[in-house]
Each structure stands twice: as C-alpha cells, then as structure tokens.
Amino acid sequence: MKKVTVYVTLREAVLDPQGKAIQESLHSLGYEEIRDVRVGKRLDILVEDKEDLEQRIIEMCEKLLANPVIEDYRYEVEEVVHS
Amino acid sequence: MKKVTVYVTLREAVLDPQGKAIQESLHSLGYEEIRDVRVGKRLDILVEDKEDLEQRIIEMCEKLLANPVIEDYRYEVEEVVHS
Image (cartoon, rainbow over all chains, first blue to last red):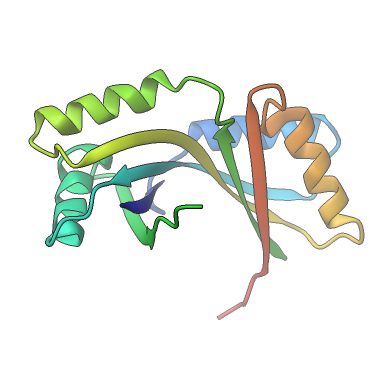
C-alpha cells in the first residue's frame, strides 16, 4: 500500500479571491504582517501497489484532481508502514 | 520575509464526503486501486518578519484558518530567498 499526497495550487497568474478574503480577514483581526495568501488543496490518497503507479497518478491528476488550465499539481509517494 | 505553508486536514474520526466523492469518481474512471481519499487545504502565506512569528501563526490557525473541533493543522516556515 502507498500513501500519495497531491498538492493542487492555482497557477501564479491566476487570481485567488478566496486567498484575498482570508488575507483581509487576517488583517482585520490585527495580523497586518500578512502580505499574501494563496489557497490550494491537499489530497491524501491511499492506493494499492501497482506497477505503473506514478503514471496512473499523473493521469488521475490531469483527468480529475487538477484543472491543468489554471492549476499546477505536485505529488509525493510514501510507503505505508504497518504498525 | 517568510513563507508559511499551513496544511489543514480533517481529523481522522471526521467523515469526508468530498473525499468519498472523489474516490468514487476515480473508481468510475477505472482507478480501482484507490482505497481512500481525504481532502484538506494548503495555504501559502507570505508574512513580514516578526519576532513572535510562530506564536502569531498558531493564533491565526486557531482563530481563523482551521476549525479546531474537526480539523488538525500543521505549518512550515521558510525564509524567502530573493533572486
């Protein structure tokens, strides 16, 4: 079994109104030191071992998990250690 | 300037219907090897240097960025290197 963590983030050129809203809320709470907030997703996925695991993860990201027009993605694969 | 990355994830005991929906979509696309999907947030925050930076990040997480009743958070702080 593998644990795959996928991070999906908006591309730099894409406006992030949710991030801006969080930034303004933080300012209004007194955290004036915040200069920028960008919101992304983190997906924790548990996958059965397969030979072409990485190729299939890339496919899943491009077909469903990320929108390649406005988002970038990155993933990490770890072995699941049974305790 | 510091770059703070905050990961907000649902606690293990909390149901994640969005994750389940993604898992089912992946199954219907033929990715039967997926055993579990959990959806979390990733926040990329740019902050001016402050002496009590970490203490303020913890406060921001507990007041606004995470819901401590159902979510856990974790953060990483990096120096911003100007190129």
